[in-house]
Structures are given as structure tokens and as C-alpha cells.
Amino acid sequence: MGSKVNSLLKWLYPGIGVKRWVGLSALGVILLVIGERNLHLEGFWAIKILDSIVVVSGIIILILGIKMMLRSFIAAFIPASRDTEIVDILYQKKHLSRGPKIVTIGGGTGLAVLLSGLKEYTSNITAVVTVADDGGSSGRLRQEFDILPPGDIRNCLVALADAPTLMRDLFQFRFDTNSELSGHSFGNLFITVMTRLTGDFEKAIKETSKVLALKGRVIPATLNNVVLEAKYKDGSVITGENKIPKTHLPIERVSLKPDQSQATPDAVKAIQEAQIIVLGPGSLYTSVIPNLLIKEISDAVVASSAIKVYVCNAMTQPGETDGYSASDHIKAMINHSHPRVLDYCIVNIGEIPQEILKRYAGENSYLVINDRKKIENMGYRVIEDDFAVIEKEVIRHDPARLARIILGLTEEI
Image (cartoon, rainbow, N blue to C red; front, side, top):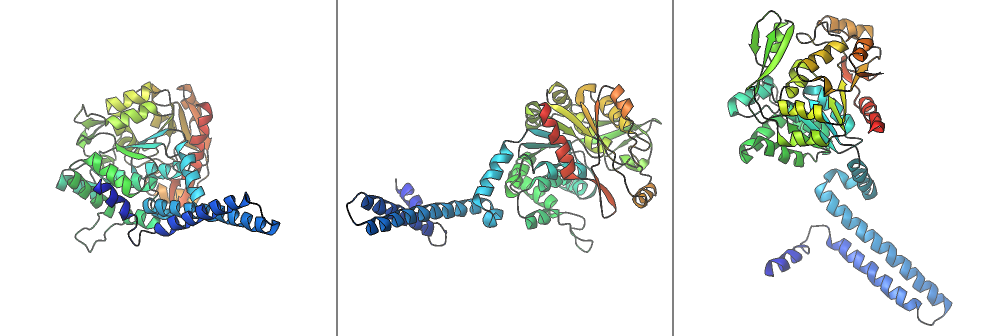
């Protein structure tokens, strides 16, 4: 009993910013009661008008007090909402919560770009992310602390974040070469520390998601410490996701070690409940296919009644998809999984400036050929659209345009 009384008394502590609005609401109720009671008494018409004004004033003051109380509560949990109308916040939350259930499967910057567009239409997003990365900051942290690589996870967390811009920038901040932390991003270090504190990588992601106020979920495809291995068409084999593209040899097949890696249960459940499943965009052999190599994930996608979409890259990737057409990308995917992992293929048909194409050609990267007829002959439908944008001379997928294309498929649900 005493603890309950103490909890109630805490609301009277100075500086909470609630007491004034409670008092204002109480004043509104008092004016409303007094005015309403006097209206029923006999009196001059002038007094009746005054009583009506008191009633109206009570209603306005009561509404204002409740509104400001709600704003104080919401601002405590959603700092970015201080300058936003409560009705807008509530409408947005409700609207997004009614959006379609979408599962995205992949990794790298391509997946993060897609997520940043989808979150404007629905909060029912689950990003299933590969954990085969072993290069850069993620690789160093993986070796030193024996954790799963946080890099792709971090990018997806930031993409879905509803936190203030400064918080998102903080997670993407990368230490310069003059520091002992050279090359590490703050977000990678944060996830590493959270993993050490919680003792669990999956729990660390969930706690980090709370910090960033996610519009959706980010789930690692597996919690097993997997490595990616590639077998090339000349028979040679190399282990390590970061090394695979550097050989510049035609890839015959990639595989995960250990072979029987277990899917994260939450990832499988999300796929089973999805209305739309999106594969890509991203590196074909090192971001998209590694997820499908996990049997439970591949089986869940195949068995799903959801609309399944593959977002094809606009450009070939040196060392991975040299000379690949759109149908070649699809063939590689189904050769590593099952023909029923997709229904649609989205390909870019927008024009790219010649100077940009020349720069890419210097890096042995070229436009992916849209061989629509071959794809249709394979039994898949093709969606052609212009969704490529140029940012700092780099070709990216337009997140807003791509999201609208994918959400347009909800008419078939």
C-alpha cells in the first residue's frame, strides 16, 4: 500500500511537467460543473449568457489541459514529437500500423535504401538480414569479440529508425584514420557493447531498436556464426564473404559453413505471416542468396502465399555478376533455392547519364540487361519502371519510387 502511495506522490515531484496540466484540466472541470449547474437555475438572461461562457471556457480549458498532458507523455517516449501535433502523431501511428506485413530479405546498403522508403507506408516491416559479412569494421569486431557482424544490421536499424536525425547520424558516424578506432562506426561499437552487456546478439538488436524507435523489426537470418564459401567455375574455392568478389572469377555456387545453420525463429514466423516478401536489392551472391541458403528460410518463402518480389540491381557487380542479365540473376537465385521463391521481378528501365555509365565502365560495371522475354518464359512477371537516382555520381535505387511500386502490388492481396 505504501509503495502505491509513493508512486502516486511522485507525480507531484517538481520538473515533471505534468502537474500544471492536471491543474488546468481540473480547473476546466470545475468551470464546466459550475456553469452547467447555474444554467439550470432561474435568473436574468445576461446571467445565463455568462454561465454559458463559463461552460464553454471550461470545455476549452479541459481539452487544452488533456492535450498538453498527452503531449508531455508522448514527448517522454518519442522526443521527436515535441514539435508535432498529437493528432498527427496518433494518425501516423495508426495509419502505419494498418499497413501490409512486408518482409525484406537481403543485406548491404541496397536493403537499407528499400527500408527507408517502405517505412513511410507501413510499420509492419521485418528485415531479415544476412550475417555472413567478414570485412571492414564488422569483420574486425567479429574476430576480436566473437560476435555476429553488426554492419548490415546497423544499416537496417538506422534505415527504419524514427529517432531524431542526430541519433541516426550518430549511429552512422565513422571514426577517422587518426584514431585507434579507425574504420569503426559508432553503431557497430554500440551493438557490440550491447551484445556484451546482454550476452545475446538478438537481444542486443532488440534493445538497440528501442533506442532508435524503429518502425518495424530487424532480425538476423541466423544466430549461427556462419561464413560464406564460393566455388568458381574453374573449380577453385575461396572462403570469406569479403574475398569472394576480389578473385574476379565466374561464380558457380556459394554455400554457408556450417551447412545446417538454423534460421532465427522470429525470421521464419515473420515470413509465414507476410503479405509481401521482397528479395534484394543488393549484392546477389553475398547479400541476397546467403539468406536463401538457410533451409528454413528458403522453405518458408517457398511455402508462403505472399506476393514474392525480386528487386534486380540496376548495374552488374564486378567479381559477382559480370555480364549478368536480369534473367541470370534470377537463375542464380533459384539454383540456390527453389523456383517458387519469387513471382515478380522489378527491373529498372530509366536512362542513366552517359558520363555516369562511363565512370562505372571504368570499374567493369555495366547496366543489367533487361531480357524480359526470358524472364516471362521462366514463369515470372516483370515490372519495368524508372527507379534509379544518381547521388554523388553513384547509382542508387529511389526508395520512395521503389516503395510505391511494391506497395502497388497490395491490390492483389
